[in-house]
Picture 1 (tube, one colour):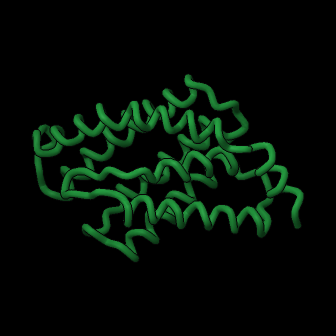
Picture 2 (cartoon, helix red, strand yellow):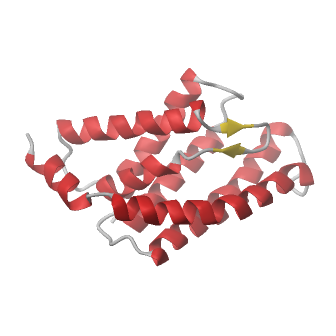
Length: 179
C-alpha cells in the first residue's frame, strides 16, 4: 500500500502543488509558532492529499511543504526531525484516508496516531535536542500536553468534516481522465 504504483499526470502535479502551497500558507503564514509549540491548520490540505494521492505522495507533499515553508518563512533554525515529522504525518493521512470511506473511526484514529507519534513522541525529542533541554522538562511537556488536549478533538472533527465534504470520486476521476 505504501508503494507509488500509479502514474502521475500534469493535473495531479498541479493539484499536489496547490495543496502544498495551501499547506505552506496555513502552516507558516496563518499558523502560530512559539519556541516550543506550533498551532496551525496545515493538516486540512494533508487530509485532501491523503485522500487523493495516498501515503507516499502525501508524505512527499508534506516534506515539500515543510522545506518550502522553511526556506520562505523560517521562524527557527532548520531541523531535519521536523521534516521527518511532516513525512510521517503525510504517511498517516494517506494510510487512513486513501481509497477508504471517511468515518468517525478513521478520523479519530488518524488524529490519535498523529498526536501520539508526532506530537507526543517525536516532537519532544527534537525540541530537547534542538534547545538542549532535558526530555523530562516541563518547558517541553507543558505546552505539548495542552496542545494535544485542545487540538485532538479539533483535528478529529475537521478530519471527519473535510473528508466527508470532499467530492473525492469526482476529483479522482477528473485527475485520472484528463490528459
